[in-house]
Length: 315
Image (cartoon, rainbow, N blue to C red; front, side, top):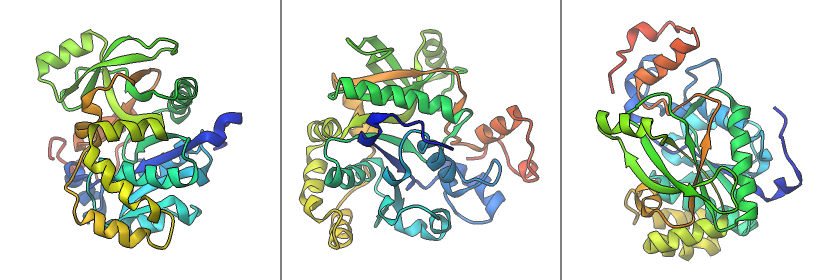
């Protein structure tokens, strides 16, 4: 795919989060692969793994040399064969999995060492999207928004297809002044009851894709405000980032870190500069459970040989 880049593309970076364990999908991935690989390293639709598809999708708007992939060392047997053609500096290997907050801060530290004012799009590696170009058009709109309003942190919220109870939801507030189709984040709702999910659906709330776009300084300021201890810990290793001392510095740091989720610790504070951009015109799923994978394959008219051996509600 060709990069749909414009002059401002030199400001753009990407960070793909590929360090998760994918535990809830293990009943399916064990059947397909016979091992414990996380779902981002699985090819469940065609021959392309979810990580490879995410990299290819990001390259529609961001030069591949500026798309970093956050990985965990223990998963190396699974990710190593998938990184062919990727510049070595783009692989960010964490010594341990400590959640999305450390993964994002490690990525921001690496980007800040090269381009401290860059805009970065953060993508989960393990989601399914029906139309890559349509999604990346929304990402480009978010890049444009943070170019005009550099203080904003923009989340992509997907227009829901149903009253899903297992997703996080975003309740939009009023429009962002000077923004195009941007809204304040009024509230997050995590895994609502069926009745609440129906209400959120009827009121036009959005599924939280956890795709976000912001400038490095805005994200750094947000972390300093919401999680000062974490910000200080990564600031202490910043001089080692991008040097031969990075690996031992991270080893020592990660040995002290508890698991920390970026949504729970940082985004849940709902800072005034947090905005949501509605995503329409495509289908999206986090493929977090076997039933969702089977539903996607069903809507595409695909039934793999392994489908009959997977219990849809197993998790």
